[in-house]
Image 1 (tube, rainbow, N blue to C red):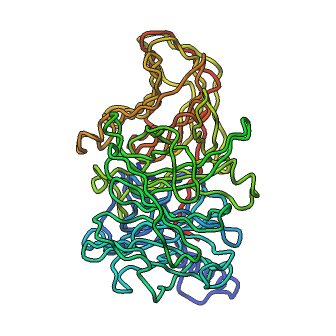
Image 2: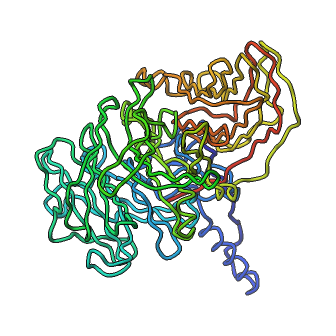
Length: 554
């Protein structure tokens, strides 16, 4: 439910005759106050949350004095702390670059949606990877005769390898015209706020492939060369370059069991505990062959400058939820050479192409971008794996926590949590004394708008169930499938759950498992816990409001 705009009261009544000068001055002051006093914006929701008609798009909603309250005029399903455009369409994020003390993140944006097609690169900036501000379109579509702008990647060319000046930001992105995909280059010399077209575009012409897109560019320091990974249907192509303009094909990586491969990634990491070092090849893929859905698959292995060799045939998955697609990862240049190998950051698109255009929105459509997470490499039972948890800077956006002491739930009981959320966006943390069998289920919301997060001890998985959320009945069957991620409890299990107006993100097992899904339940209706099959102990429970971030305000 959207909070109504506060009522404004004012006015005066006085004589019209000749008045003493001090009284005249007083009345003039009062009149000016009344005339200039802010009014609730046109189109503000009424007390039922239903927007009244508005003749044209309105500016960002009216700010509130409570940083945790949804602003007046906010659409019913607009996230409180996840990035969305003010209006129109959003999808794939593009890896951010760090310039002048600020992160420059791009995402695909269609200002003509739903009437017209084609995406551009829209810019959002942040100093903490948590609070993002929209800054407008940075690479326009349909400007150079080669089509719209699809996914790619930008790099800061510190060595001036491309010849546009040291520190220029060079972006390579797919352009599509009449179904033909080519790779084009764009240059920014104003810190990434705007890009100009390279007159030699396309820098890579299509060799006759149907799917030939999403170039990810990385610097191979050991060999002093640029490396590109390109999504080519059910294979990934590797290319090298010295100048970002001329590219040579060197090898490929073929996987036929994971659907159409998109949005690849390549990076090196080290486990500081074991000292083991590896390259990681990632890609957005489909896990239907193993009962999953689309997400970020990755292989650890070796890179020799021309070819990637995976340690195993089967990939691992960074997130087991339904909606963590087109994910990007990056390092922080301030971490130094070793620190950049020890941690990275990642975020994805909270949506799924199985129902991407069906998710509810408002003036905008297409879902949102996920919370930024920190990822590290760890050796677990002899295997190198990526672990992820919410970035530490998120804590600065938290309010005062409501906490509760330990309590027990007996099998068959469904009880209210002793502390409840008071806002639509919050963070819930709890430690569950994990049983050997049975389940624990946390239900957010009630009635026909409910989402369940739980742990199934028998199966050894954490799960999210949105079959009863506010939109499930109108969505395809894929949306209503329960999503799981394997996790070992080892006696107890810590849950860290980020709940926003239209999404739920679950992290557990010290980062070994995560679930990201679009989800629609107003937890202010209550959060309950149920024990199934065995007594459950819960401790260290806290519920913390999250500050609202309007990305469309300065």
